Length: 110
Image 1 (tube, rainbow, N blue to C red):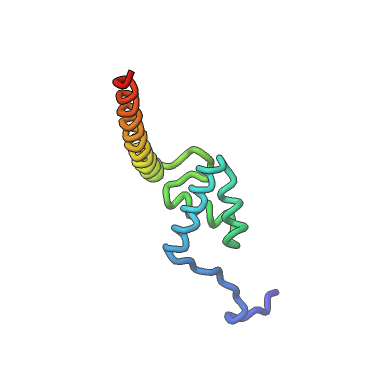
Image 2 (image 1 turned 90 degrees about the vertical axis):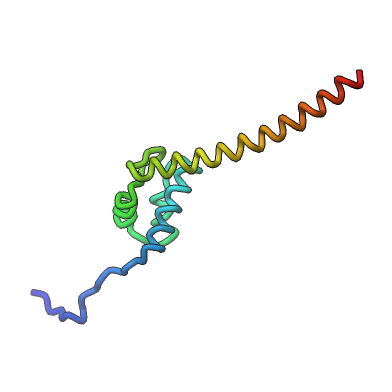
């Protein structure tokens, strides 16, 4: 028989949307960099249950498994990847233009 009163009841911590977003981003970034282990790492780093983090990932549309995302996460991840690739392509094209110019200058000096 329990003798606890309402004052003795322990309630869980409430997290703000910003805190949840920070943890979800951490897990996604960790998994992108390391392949897997983001959920465990976030649980240790932030002191939050892995089950809680799994629920947040599910609500955010991000899979806890490496390389897989839910419908919401996949579009976000694809857009982010496209943006990064676009920036890399632009930098490479500028480098190529400079090298072509240098090549043409050397070619004309022969």
